Length: 590
Image (tube, rainbow, N blue to C red; front, top):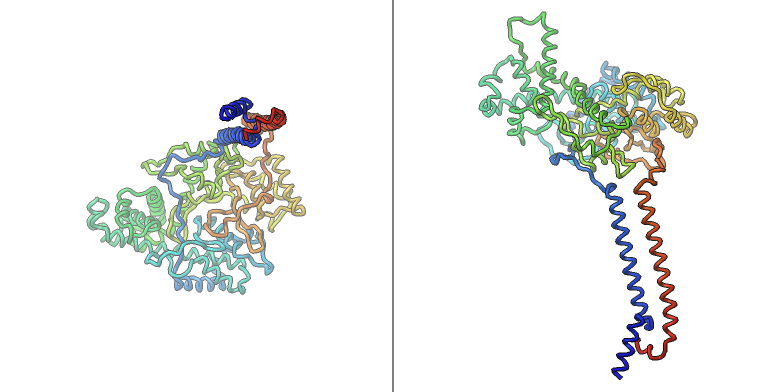
């Protein structure tokens, strides 16, 4: 009856559905699911709280920063063929510039690995040329590398833009063809460096005349703003002040296209940028040196002046001198970061770097600021993230990074000089080959001084042991251009030698250089874990700190919750067996 059914349902409710097999299982699993779900949510919440610092994405206070662009540099084939033919003639006749560059490269050439034909691979030759152009001419060639990747640029009247192919790639291929495509000899590499210098010097001369004509085209606007006098550009003898203005425009054209940004040139002539101002100061210094040398032949009653053709060798000298001139800014960045280095290990916490203010010159123009994003610093190899919760900026990697190069549309740009090259050159000259034993290398390095080391200092016993460990893997010898020695050098000279995140490799997989700022497609191969030398010992006690103890506590809590669920399952099963004995009336609950 209906009343009897109600009593049965009431009894069923009283025993809590344990007498109903299907309902009992549904309730039991629902309860388990709810409990487990709560534990999972609690665990996720706790994990997110513990990992909050590791997931932190540190940001610079400067929101207007943008990554530096990398315009692909190309040149007309007719110009390349002319430069190449001149270079081959110089190569054959032993022209003095080629011989001088060859002598400068000799020690490094002997230390670099060769292919089976006894020649340098394309990657090795690119490294050799880039390194010694930076040391001799003090600027960095753009596009020198194994595979000059980059977006195709439209042909234009700007001499640095493309019509057919990139200059370094084409010249390198032409030189390599002289050996049947099997590689390059030392003289070929020296000749390539001299050919690229020729292109740079030719471009300097072209842009001087373009700068003069650009100012002439903007004469009315410049006169209106009182930047130029009425007939200032019409004189055959240009005053020192006028020459400086032409140098400003000349430098501006390395950054910009006059056809597209002429109005911006007017703005920059009214308020020169820091780089324009630096070139202007350098030009004035070079002019004063020129006038002093010519003091006995010049008319002392005539105002100091230069003709337009006289400015061409002036700006060429400025190009040669600008590398060391602007490196003062690089040294200032380095000194600033070293003061922030708490452990004197070449690392500064990222949050401290991003908290620094902008540094300006006496005119209020920016000299430098630390505005690069964390992602960008990671991409250029400028971060040590061995502890994800505490990322650190690698001082030497940051200073040598592309953000500290002058933006340029030309064949070259000005980057910070690599002080580690000088360290490695000393070793190469003394060793005279690709490898040496540790007892040969160590005395050389312990007698060196650098810009951050006023006097030689002994290497730690740990570093000595690590170098011996490197040698043990190579039959007792250390390869000077191997990845492990490059990493070791970073720990020996942390403020000079970059940590080698990224390497060039030849076809056989031999590592050739650790330079990561040359802008080449094949220069992005990361080291694998088994190739790394464990220079820094991990503090195993760190896991027992507060966070470690907290993690252990919640792991035990989760294990206890799991045991409790198992206990509840057992109790529920026992109750089910007891409930089945209640009687036939309970079966109506089904």
